Length: 410
Image (tube, rainbow, N blue to C red):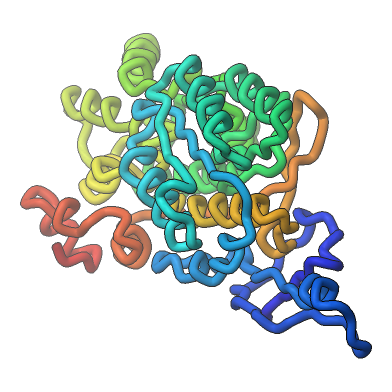
């Protein structure tokens, strides 16, 4: 069903109701019923706002073209600031090009937006935000390195009348206008459920599980943990599984490997690992291989559908990966920014939920997108169909047979 949000009546606060299905562009006027009026009044009353929903984005970016009319009456620039190139390769490989494509397809010229990466520096991220605002940004899309710099950026932006969209990570204690991410508790649930399925499929008789986490400073890591701990808690409580050892949270793969080695040395009975993402899992899997661990005997989980992660899945060393189609997130953030820039209220079908800022104790209007669990059974219809990873790169000689078995032709 299409939805029209009229400028003169768009006062309902967005963010509470999810609308199923795609929303098509509607250009019908929303004029008053009847009597003639001045041209200015007529123009105001007949203006309409194009509508998209959180479920309408596709990998051809067509929905961004559907909101192109917003570009002409928007004011100011849009600044995009990404955090680093270490915690995930996604920011360079996918977020930056997808955000660029989304904003261009929505009608902005190269001079009307910028996409930058802070390279892991709080000072750089803050400086980038300040520079964007000085150059005329009316909206910032910002993925914070940590809550501290996020709060600083949002305070500065608010004092200059600039709206901020938290991208991927929520700034606890911040003052953003909206938040765009995947449903991160559901991401965690998928990881936990994936481990449960893998333990059964690989016939691990008595699972002795090491549970690892992302960085404690990342609210997403907290949400992931909530999700997978909820899945595993009953198994630990019942004694079906045994929780062995402990490790501090990190998104740094070498640190994760060191932590795992320390725990594995201290607890030789560990035979399954809840790893929060592919990047942390990869060096640990390599370490296990050097210790003679065979395929499909030691379950390890992941997230982000990296090339190496997918290859580890094909070869039987990783159970699966929580796949988050980043083109959805990029388009959702870009669409929100376009509505804000134009002074329009985003449709309720786009802002489909809320997320708790546990520091400020407020509910943040959010776009929450749906993740998928990827295994060899659906790899061809997810990451390959989406061109997230090229089959030619995935299906090198060592993985050719596994690709063929999974219905992937490289």
